[in-house]
Figure (cartoon, rainbow, N blue to C red):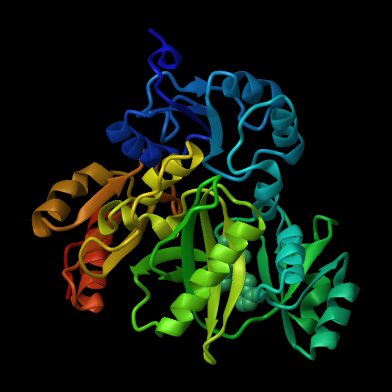
Length: 390
Ligand code: ADP
């Protein structure tokens, strides 16, 4: 009997990376059928989801044939083009989040305009076509450095340039000959993320606000909740995220990356409308993981509690090194710290690529530095960098 005939909800995910793979983990206990459309049978999620559809999730024909087999379509990434999404909606498919919402996670200029118009806190910005326009923007701000961003397609710091005004003419940002987003350089103290999940009815749950520690534009560590964050700042961050979710009518996970400044303000950096790296800690650290809540939201089921299960939780990303043999290091890592949770994404190891993560959940009142130490020792161990954790 088909899933439809048995009344089993079928969720289709466009893209088969690690987010889809971890969503499968959440689909199993609910007996929700997760399907993915992805480029290759070797992709991270395709390895763990039987009957994955191999095709191009950015292509209108492939995606519409896939969506026809699913009750609801959702996403592992934000790269499905707007015309394809609009066409799917036009043909009656249920797409969550909607094309209109998703556009704000795809197009940074569109996002800044919408959030700015709604009075949500953003850096000062302008869409500029060339170095001269960027220079005029800097003069208006009285700044000697500006941040330039590719309007679409950037990730992990690729497509972001911090540029002194007198070097604008040679900035790579203009090499493609397309308009770019120029932003005020925010002098932040640390980076936060507020992850919320929203149902079509408007019900929202908000996870504790986390700190994301970045190195060279890539998130390397997430501290949940953000250590020592004043209650008022945490509340402000949550309010902004809930405000964005409501303003844009987001369904599913919304991650809002924020800058926290020394004067206690929060400023939106960017948005993602899918399970997000800053929410991976929720698998073991929260009552309901972001992956399960994403599934619940897109299926319009009641959302699960976002609270911590125990104490502070640390997640550290495993980035690929030159040493490809991850499993050779597994026994020593697991043996040294039985409390560490290891997630390997089944991806080919390439230097700098996100290929897994580890999570350490502390008891209430645990020392966060001790948890960070354990997480980082596990990551170094998996990378074959030795077990010395002094
Ligand atoms: P990506 O889409 O590649 O993740 P982001 O917009 O998150 O790019 O930017 C990557 C990093 O660049 C941020 O994590 C932050 O450290 C820095 N950054 C981005 N925008 C600004 C800004 N306006 N002011 C200061 N730093 C910024």
